[in-house]
Image (tube, rainbow, N blue to C red; front, top):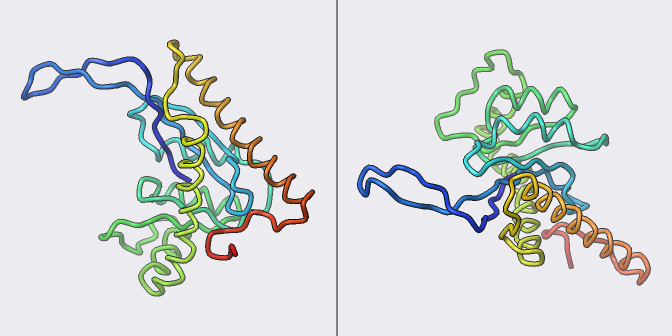
Length: 196
């Protein structure tokens, strides 16, 4: 899971101590969960550009289609005890990149303790599971390359719809590729390590 920004053709004003007044581009943020094997976007949420990732995590988990997921990985922005508890309540193992000073103190979160213990004791096993999140970076890059990284709608509600349509179009592209693989009797999409 990760998030990415999409530019908007509009500027917002903000106060800067040094220059007193400045302008910067506005943007929308797209938070998403991507399937490791499917490489499609399974869960998606749109927020204003300066919204932090962690509070959106519970919404993404709620929107996740029911299935037997074994783990979920994310960067440091998602690493906290509440998110670890939420992941383990849904039957998955959390693999969030901890900060260097993270402690194994559970403070009511056994899944946090297990995750940090694995990170400290067996770095290779933790890194193997954590680096599955590199798939989302590839998906974000592919989506932006094919469908663009700028939103052209002016109104906020239409910008949100435009982003949701980008997600639907990307998933249709992935499904079309899977269908073509089946028709041509070629191997299905594989993770980077195991591919050809």
